Length: 284
Length: 196
Image 1 (cartoon, rainbow over the protein chains, first blue to last red):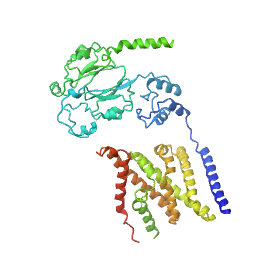
Image 2: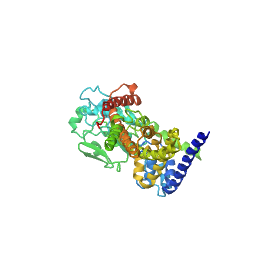
Image 3: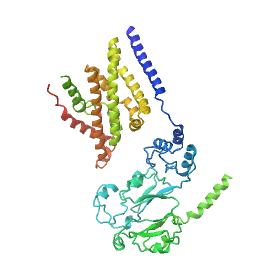
Image 4: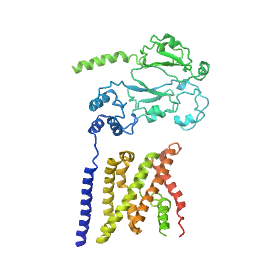
């Protein structure tokens, strides 16, 4: 019987001593914890996607409070979250605009291949074999490494080339990092017209490799009313700061590689204002 | 003699009787945090730290409390209590004193509470009748053995992503097979010993 009492007493005392020590230690070693971290963490999406460049939402919140990151650092939350975070931090709403991914290639099935690739079906592996099986050095390989990393089902391979669903895209940047060809970039969501080609070879070489490669004919640059298009290294580029999304370049391009995202759902476009008007009326 | 015994303990803990590969202790964190080499290294460092400290404190408690009162049968329970409290304390201390190390170790520090290799090392200290210095050396080198094992394993696992293995092996199965092969490789050390 005394054994039991001893055992209970010793463990009890040990536990009590440790408990007391820990309680005391927590007083001494009390580290200042900023409450704003918890508040910001509650506002962030909590997907821990790492799109901000930090290991997770908790680290992101800490970095914002520490001043190491901007209030608009979360690409997934977009302007709404940025505004809330700005409120918590007591700074002005930066009015960030939404950004999305865009794939700078529209070749796919319309681009020719150097050889038949029969290896591992990932873009990284295919890219390692003689710089990929595609004739064009900057062609989408179409194995969908970007699709595999997308947590938001926002990118798909259609006709051999990856395409971003801009409605679903949250600009986490996972696909940008996954593309071995570096064809995916984050662009402002308001931008609708893109020169979807990255080939900087001479026009003749491009013509042999891809039906829809930029041959630097300069037609788009000449026709652009805003003078937003320049030709560098045999490749047309749009200055998104100047572009007005008029879509003229997309219609004049003889190679049809300039995509106008606004032009495609032609039927859906008139319906959208009506729907928003209806919802506005409902709100009133 | 003494130095030779310490060397024997070190070599034993790091290679011959490696906690992971020949004693199969601490498999949970070994599997859980070995997807990336740098996080694995962080976990390894944290384990070295806690194992060394736990060895020292458990030796003191065992010698001056449990043995003195004839309560050796409470060792396991008492050690668990000590380790849990110790990890909590270390976490608080680091948070205040060395925030950079605290953030580097991150989640791995509290995870060590459930690392059975830590409990294993203090129980083995008692079983082998090590004195204070031997206990601490065994604790620290046991941690180094853990670090070696988890870093080796993590670097292999990083490369495994490019291996073309059957779909059924994806994830943990292939990791377990790899760990088994590594353990086989470590069997090569089993015949080693230091001639006195």
